[in-house]
Length: 409
Image (cartoon, rainbow, N blue to C red):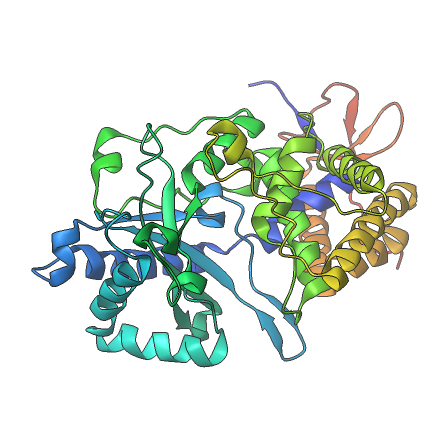
């Protein structure tokens, strides 16, 4: 195998290392998947009244899209991560209200003492509207949302779902009015297409009552667009921590996906995405940015196209607009930074001190290990530190003796 080298200490290197630090740890991911499987088994196994509805359980949202990030902390404030779980029942939405399906799923979960307690904790700690049933896992800093749903009869492909519209439970003429459209699987497919990667599920997985959660991806193999989404979500969590109204992950993911142009560099891709968002905001003028749900364009229906930015109130929208400008300025300052002393505070301010510190420490440890192993190199032309796969010259990169990467002492 030929000797190769990769750059360490570049802006992209640090951004990738930050992505490693904000991604769920293997333990967090494994714990979350076990919780999901346990809830799924409760809903789909056994001889219970719910079984007559042939329930199927699927992951959706960030877990399905592989863009989940760790809980964000600021003092006593904690923003937990979540698993969105669809429980699809075989019901006719024209004759059965969403409240009825919601009640059947809630009743089944409350038959389980542990789940009953977690539902009560969630109502106290993380209240949510009636569109889902939330279970709190306080010691793990996450919650699991069970979303009652059924197939949308208007979708000839049988992909789109209908979920609860609790605001209509006390004032409807026909049961269908208590449902609203959602299309998580088309959205995941749309994002997959934007990343230009493919994942194939086996027939057995597709037919399972509890569909598998996509496996945890190491950052090094995660599609660049997914890493960019993680950074956007991390900055959102920093800016809006403690706020009741904030941009939804699906809004950020949609904006990233529709402005992404295939860059492999995280810094370049973020620049393109943020410049695109800023241009859209500017084009809206005194009005507001409209973020069209791509699934409504992929599979049109009589309900029109959802605006994913509409839920933001005036204060949250203005805060988001300013956060886009702040992240653009951060990238400009990061590109202009000369060395770690200038780069570190720029990234720490935008993405969090602890996360950035861990990323920089990891880079320093890699360089120190490479130095003692004889695989630290420097470009023969230009500048830059490289780590070689073996202590030999490679493409103009020369092995160097011991180095002190971050310190001058």
